[in-house]
Length: 235
Image 1 (tube, helix red, strand yellow):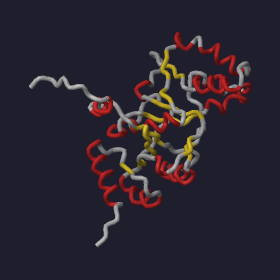
Image 2 (cartoon, rainbow, N blue to C red):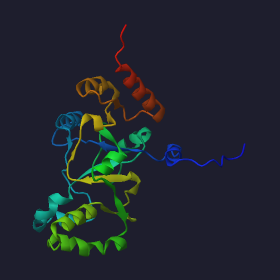
Image 3 (spheres, one colour):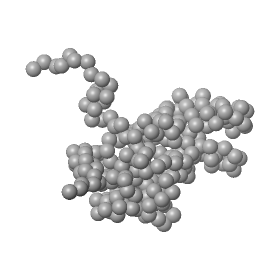
Image 4 (cartoon, rainbow, N blue to C red):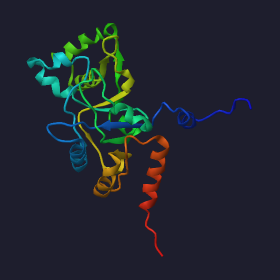
């Protein structure tokens, strides 16, 4: 059989690309003595993903005492567009990575994150990023009008170095500057170990939960099963 010459819609085309995902994943990690499950409990109770840290090309300068006035404007919430059936790859210990993601998290539709101001990270080499320091200094000196100042901070917070000494573009990261508030209905699904799914499913209905080590076919099967199980049947 020859290859089909029938034109496909963008939706059909993307469905066939196994390296593409319509979803963005936020993974928790142990923090301040709290385990991943406790942190996910807090996130879901507050319905907020909090931006605690900045993660960009300008990090070292942002840590200086004279940067305290702009530091909060660079703090972000991070996501990955790694396909759902490959989340387990991100959980492997990795030499040189300063953090270790945990087996708990949340999944959102990429469309929702974009509507909330999220954007793909800009991976750049030092040569490409160098001119951006001029923009950063102007932000730091507060030389822009308020609206432009805010937009410049949002853009600069997305810039990440990518060269022979530092290459993290495989994370396929997205970021939102500032906290992300959400409703349960806006969560595509949650992530937790299979043994904890009954607890989180009952506590945070109607959110469905998947295990990060499941492959795509099982994820689809389990999400469909959970959805069907929630439909009330009457005699």
